[in-house]
Image (tube, rainbow, N blue to C red; front, side):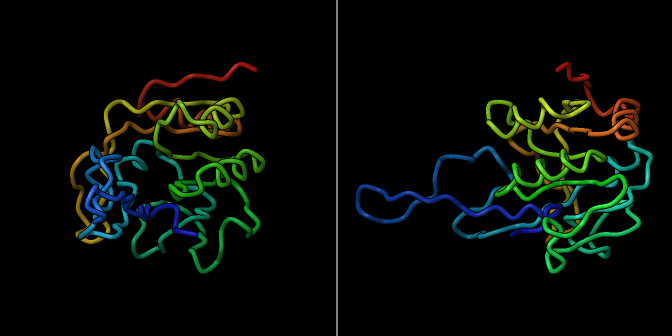
Length: 188
């Protein structure tokens, strides 16, 4: 399991006609995606997102650790705590690992109180399932400049927009009022 607020992305490789391994063309648009000389980079959610939300969360179950995180949360679970299997409480902030987004969003939906930040991959099964169960879906206005875990500075622009998903009345209200993008209430 990778740390949710520290998106660790593994490079995808393919074989060339001469049998050598070459970086996949897939994902080339992501400035924060790994490559052959950069096996993984951790990316953190910028403080501006939390300033806009204007709330303190009760729990960040996928934290890189308080020294590295901008998440205003009373408590957090790191990879060592295994936040996915630990019990959650209160309003949660979830920025899940890219390799297991669906499982984390399922847990947040079942918990019913929190906000998630994920890539806006609206063509995926996990996105459809999550959007159908969320109280509010918010597509960001512009792309979020995540913080490079190696430099501590914003770098580049992701190759895709992001979306927030909120479950629970308070989380939905916070997300609607944050002015982070275009928000929709989900009708079932």
